[in-house]
Image (cartoon, rainbow over all chains, first blue to last red; front, side, top):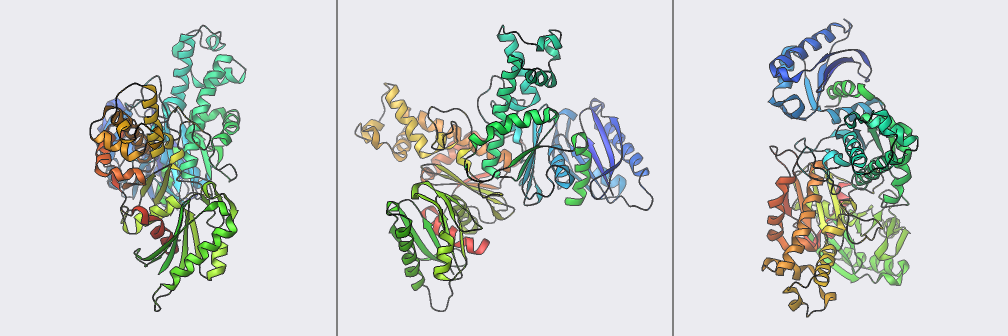
Length: 315
Length: 315
């Protein structure tokens, strides 16, 4: 039995997770990161304590795993940098290890989510596979030769920042052309807004958002596209074109068995998969060879808890 | 002691290679692929026989490794597809294994070259590293967790066909925007030719090629750029911009310890390295973390023989 802790900008969730990756109990609290590291870490400690108290007496909690929305140093346990928590070089791993006297592991949230899918989700049974999280940004987690792979300095699998072209706005990282500025939920919203503002084309989207462009969201755009709205369709089509570029780049480089799509945009499900699969073949290099299966990730919001717990098993 | 066979479009070279990757003897013959598989394979058999005869009597030839400029099936030993040899699904591995009664291994030439650099060249001692071959096209070989990695179906590490933008001509593979159409020797020559044809700008290049644009080559362009020629410099600068994009994409995805540059363009050596290193930092995502060292590959033309021989050791 492990503890998995999923630290997000909005909520922290800790869960009691069985050795084969099932959540037995979970509890959340708001992160409120503006209160600063000292306060937030105290909340996290209390949360973990509550969860440990729920563990069956005859089963030992073997370790604590933590997923953070930023850069973690697996060796020291420090969070190197976490922009939306305002953390820079904080000793998260060591603090929890000392507090609970159990082995503690830490990694990036997208890597952790890939590990959850690998344990008992869409990537199970694979040797080489990839999770792409399509949300506000784009994250990635790689399974290579049956193990989580994050590179030499733990700065790898940053799928969202692969440069794939030139775009009309810069990425948060400062560069122009990052994959996530074309293919994330944010990208879809920004491009749709641009189309609405710059063209006079009629679109049903206006109806749903009551003409308030700040209310634009990915679900509305996808729903309108599905219903045949021309402007929504052209926005979704651009997103899919770039998704296909990002995915085939990964196939041509890493040739994984399975690529799973997670994060908010993956809720578009089969509709999105079909659009992608229709266009992948033309961009594949070796047309006569088998290539990656593209699927929707299975764990949704639970991926963070399951995957961080699984760090204890697979580290 | 192993036999390494480097099959190219122009020549086939076979070499006797020590267990630690040193070439003891080598012999070549022209490939002349238009003669067809039956004739070429007979020449390769004769070449290997000649090389085996040169092996010291007290040392056994333990295996035969083969590098091909195309797609090989490691399991069956077949060459799946080799455009510039005109081979499609030919039983290269099995034929040589039967003829010489020794274990026989086969892989793509860029993967094989990476293995040579990993054994005793620029990638030695690394756990995760990449060789990029910058020639007519761009090839790639990945070392991941201390082993050659080519993916699930052996179609990975195709660095040259990662899409990085839109270009003024299509790639041989049919797509637009492949990395090799921006950053190979061919790309440098085509873009320079375009500049010469479309602008009236004076350039020293014209002097060197006697105004015959078909004689343009990468070395002349680099030499003129080094000497300060404005047109040559703008062509080299574009090449370097895209090389930096391709390299940082690999860093952001795979975070290797070392990236080695091989192939014809790597002869520009320190001049090229300096241009690249000047521009990499701005495209790196995590500015405070260590990142890949970029170096020139060490084995030059010998990489094919050494690397294919090393398939016997590392498979």
